[in-house]
Image (tube, rainbow, N blue to C red; front, side):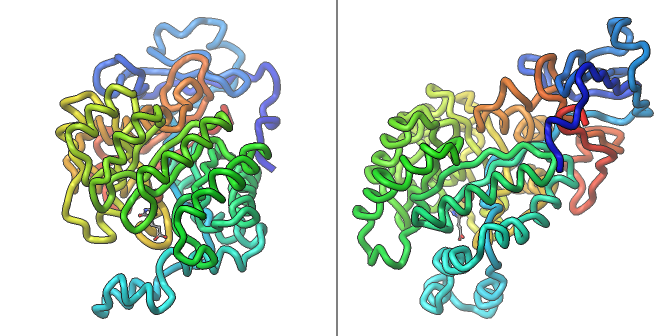
Amino acid sequence: MAGQSKSRAGDIRLWRNARLATMAEGSAGLGIVEHGAVASRDGRIVYAGPESELPPTLAQGVETIDCEGRWITPGLIDCHTHLVHAGNRANEFEMRLAGSTYEEVARAGGGIVSSVKSLRAASEDELVTQSLPRLDALIAEGVTTVEIKSGYGLDLENEKKSLRAARQLGEQRPVTIRTTFLGAHALPPEAKGDKDAFIDLVANEILPSVAAEGLADAVDGFCEGIAFSPEQMARVFDAAKAAGLPVKLHADQLSNLHGAELAARYGALSADHLEYTDEAGAVAMAKAGTVATILPGAYYFIRETKKPPIGLFRQHGVKMAVATDNNPGTSPLTSLLLTLNMAATLFGLTVDECLAGVTREAARALGLLGETGTLEVGKSADLAIWDIERPAELVYRMGFNPLHARIWRGQ
Ligand code: DI6
Ligand code: FE
């Protein structure tokens, strides 16, 4: 089994003859170091910079890997996924291609509720088994940290089962998993249309119990006409605050309910989607330091036409992360590299913004910037080594994986 325990105390490893994109805050662009080296001790970065300035103690008698001029970036981070789910909704996809509307699909038993049924019917171990191939697809592209949300259980037992399955994934693979409780994702059938009563259940019973067991690192919600109102989300956020958990929000994806401002008011780590966010929302996020998580996979898959206001985010200094939103309904996407191409092609993000979006800014969106997301001393030695000539290739290609090696916590 993979784990931190694998690294032996005092182990120093050195990756030399590399080109680094450190992504360090404040450095220009990607923080490029030509002729660079990275050293790790006990899974932590102890040096990242020009090879010529490497302290001699880190250069001799240590395990050395010659990178032969390859590029090293921080290990990639997918900061928004619903990766733990059961079954899939390819049948709905076919129905929509044949001309059915979303409503017809829902009446035929489709939509989020069909994923809830499948998840409730699966055991925790079955969930792990079904989710592993998706996680492995991300890992194969150099991903070293993945956020995973609940939200297809929608009752105490099944939300906990999802979060435990997510934690199990982190024990079965060399990857950091951050779990997010998304109880306020959709209304389960047994709530019989009573959203307020369901929000009471989420805020007063499920969330405190999930928090008490330490199953969630953050709390999320779906603030939308077809889901929950800003007032209802605020009640969930108050409960999160009481439990000491940071919040994030699916905001302004299909309409502008001012979810971005709500998220900012609660000091959210991130607000996600944001297609319909307006300038007031962008200003509020900038003030609060709330990261804008851009999810081009869902935009593409549902054939949305309203783009998130990237220009406003730039103008007001809102940091942008990029993620897959892997989920069975609106983004069955397990390639973070393809997501980068989509963010650039569909939304006009630059190469630098794309790469920051799956490293430094994704770490910030998870509250993990002190731990990972850049090549800097003190952080976890999470690295991706690429067979590329220039970083733009990571964004430019579609469906090609140039990963040479992946290092998680120095291994
Ligand atoms: N926004 C989405 O796009 C997904 N959830 C959310 O909050 C949809 C999830 C699904 O259809 O299963
Ligand atoms: Fe999502």
